[in-house]
Amino acid sequence: MAVVWRTKHLTMNGWPFEGLRRFFKPRMLRRRRLNIWLGGLLLVAICLTAAASWWGLALEPNAMNIRERLVPPSRGHWLGTDHFGRDIFARIAYGSRIALKVGAGSTLLAALLGAMLGAWAGYKGGWWDEVIMRFIDGLMAFPGILLAIMLVTVMGPGTANTIIAIGIANVPVFARITRGVFLTGRNALYVEAAHALGARTWDIILYHILPNGIGPIIVQAAVTFSAAILTEASLSYLGLGIQPPDASWGRMLKEAQPQMGRAPWSVLAPGTAIFLTVLALNLLGDGIRDRLDPETH
Amino acid sequence: MVPLQYLWRRIVALVVTLLIACTITFAVFNIIPGDPAMLMLGTEADPEVMVNLRQQLGLDLPLHVQYFRWLWGAAAGDLGTSVRLGRPVAGLIWERLPVTASLAVLAMALTLMVGVPAGAYGATHRGRASDYLVSILTQAGLAIPHFWLGILLILLFSLRWQLLPPGGFVPWAKNPWQAFLSLLLPAAALASHRVALVARITRTAMLDALSKDYIRTAKSKGVSHRMLIYKHALKNSLIPVVTVAGMQFAGLLAGSIVAEEVFALPGLGRLLLQAIGYRDLPLVQGIALFIALAVVIINFLTDILYLLLDPRVRYD
Image 1 (spheres, each protein chain N blue to C red):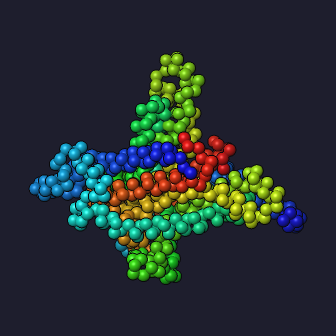
Image 2: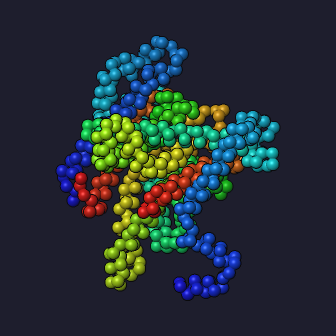
């Protein structure tokens, strides 16, 4: 093995091989930084697409044109058109707004609710801890998508309800993480000191203990963000999430499926959009986790 | 062996969790909507029909009476009656369960058959291009939405190459081979995420195991490379894999809701969606409860299996 490498080294010396090999040699790749860079760049690109839709730079996402149905990708329609003649790129751009909104909204809701429950359970301990955590265990019995489906069934579909449903479905994991932080934190000396100085319970929770556990919560937020986007796409695909005429990536897939034999681009585009967004967030999450916790890989 | 006292404590916790899951299900479908009958019939329904439905479902009784009646029924295996189909919910679930269960089992088998070797390969070829390739595929597998992968698989294998059916299901009793073929694509789509997850965990666990002293000892004793990898390292790194696999099995039941819709499979997920479409709340409630209970019980069994596999676990 060593010999082979040696000969390679000798034959492929100097520019540009040296640099190329260094770049492509996995060990040389700074994996952590690459994760953050790749994920960050992708996410910026997605946000720009969303912004284009926001500022009206893309075509109108709901404008139908019966004469231009199922047009393949072309200069006029970058990603082609769907069965109503709507421009797919415009719908993807609009869908990215929805995806980011639902992802951010439900992650925020889950993190706030979960952290509050977890902090209270961990800090108070005893009876409080028992009741809150048993409830969280019960919630965990429902896989995220199932709980979201149940909530949307009784609350009705739509953007706001989708955010609430996905948010609640993700509360347990935040509650568990935060509780762990507070179980160890509540006995620390600085907490005792704050207590002795007369700090109120919520002040201790918010300003003294929580900052110590913010790392794992941020990492979890990145994971939840991408999972929430996947869940929204699934819900909308099932017809339970975002409602027409609003464009959502999942709904676009559902509507394109019957014509996918004739117009494969109409299923390729929304799926790729979901894939790239989730990939970007996963990469960022991995990168942040490695940064915060260099021990684990 | 698992100490009895510990097992007993776990069983009590299991029962408590089951009870809470029941309560959450009841609360979601009977308290949040305000009036379930209104939710089912719409706001402009005939008042007489509404009164009849309320009586039929026992909605005119006080909430706690409804709850205990429903809980008692569920404990005896009676999940109520479907409003739309007029048949017991439990029977309907039982009818559709084989499709969903076989889909989940097949997806799990694919997950382990692909995920474990891929992870082990990555670990034994650490730092090489092939390891890097495995990592890239893993990232991709974690990010790809399984219903989209399903659509792509239909596009390629069914529409373009016409190798496998694009959807639908042939019962096992009728033609086992056809049944298997109709489940193959949905199982592959459903497995994609889990394959990636299992590969990642296997790789990490295996790298951890390979760095241990006993591996060095075995190596210095002259144990062959093959034995070293498969017998010593892989066996020890399978323990975390089992835990994750158990948890994922529960997730597969939920994931199949979407996969069944993509491939038009007549399973539990499809039944759930039809029930939602018809606003058949007793049926929706019954299926949701069934899946939640299955998840809790599978997780419990995984925990026990984990204890049996790993004698080092402390019981506290």
